Amino acid sequence: MFWADQVADEILKSKRYIPYWVDDMKTPSGRVHVGALRGVVVHDLVFKALKNKGANAKFTYVFENHDPMDDIPSYLPRGKYEKYLGMPLFKIPSPEPGFSDFASYHALEFKNVFNAMGCEPEIIWTKDLYTGGKMNPIIKEVLDKADKVRQVYKTLYDKDLPKNWYPFQLYCPNCGKVSTTIVTDWDGEKVAYECQVDKVKWTKGCGSKGEASPFSSKEGMTGKLPWKVEWPAKWKAIGITVEGAGKDHMSSGGSHDFAKLICENVIDYPVPYPITYEWLLVGGKKMSSSRGVGTSAKEMLQILPPQLNRFLMVRIKVNQQINFDPSDPQTIPALFDDYQRCAQAYFNHGDKDQARIFELSQVGKAEKPPYVRFSVLAQWVQMPNMEEEIIKNGLTDWAGYARVWVERFAPEKDKFSIQKDLPETTKKLSAAQKKLLYKIAAELNKKWVAEEFQTRIYDLGKELELSGNDTFAAIYLSLLGKNHGPKAAWLILSLDRKFVKERFNAV
Ligand SMILES: [Zn+2]
Image (cartoon, rainbow, N blue to C red):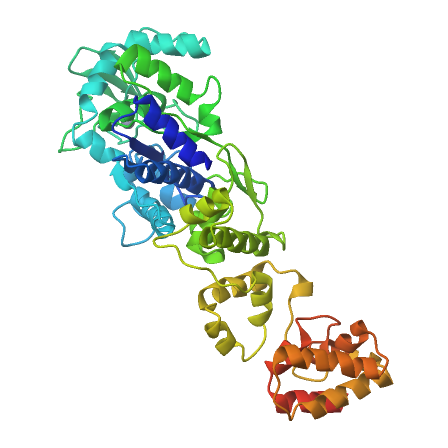
């Protein structure tokens, strides 16, 4: 059975995860990389598997726009952004006009990508969660039970936190930074805070001290829980019952174990059904969103159609690493081949897992993909006058991706272009090869079907005692300046006949 269906079965059987509220999250601190897409797709699959089984499931995605900027993405001017380090992302200006702030600029780009891939979670902004008052009762609970939170640090990390350590970070009323503040007391209504000049290495606090309410309201957000406490607090505030994370968070002693202890010992909330997923690497590397390194999620839509992007993640079990390496010339053509195979299983009632993988890779209604192989299409897009053939075979959409592949990832041997002038390489042709070309030129007055023309070329070569290789090399060398190329008859028939005739007669 497909893994997400198994997970859905388990969730439904246990009856502990009602009302089936699936959630995932991300801090939009920079251009979101490909790896984060796996989390969205994994949660989307579990959500859809639950829906398929008749559960009234819900799917949300939390953008943590209230987190501080702790690094400046490499693609942005450092000088312009340095002053915002330590401030919440929603208070920092967007790099481009048209967006309300830094967080929404990056979040909406990412949202557009996963929406295009058929993932349509309801979006929740953490700032709204706080200012809407949903976090307030939990903030009070956590501050009241600060000793129990300290105990969790002791249990899990053997860390002794001082009695005046409180799990809250105030947005400094003076300088607006959050990374620099600590809370040292709590009287049930207000917290005492300090904005420490040297709390972190990468930005300075203003040194102010005072008292303030930790509760946010419509008038504004006053501060936040530390991330590790906030994760489970968010589960409770929203009512989440299913949420996983990448394996780093889920490892023993990781933030999920921490969250679990907070649930059990502090906020009394059942831990959501956990799903641990492995990395999605691109070319063997894990990417970082704040550093802006690696392939951004947006770039993925430029190199693969949305369905293939989903397919890339759907077909690999959640606990297995995906290493997508588009620079390997086999990767993308093989992915398209696999997709066509799974489509066959779906439409011809073949292998059940393959059929399900295809079904869950769809964006909207399942559509039959083209039958022409991607590797052939990659040749077609390099031949002139193939537009009609491409349209006739329903390849217009895939042709765009084939062109991108040829341009960016195809090895030299798979690239070709019709040479405007007679290539130098034709000087090496034998007398028999030249004769072959004259004979082919003479055949061009007739009407030809590609298959039959291919046989005719082969037979003409044979008559001249040429091997198959030498026969076709003659054609490729005179047209492409290379000794190999796409199927010769198709290549010739895609070209202007007069041009081919003149070329072959000129060798
Ligand atoms: Zn300050």
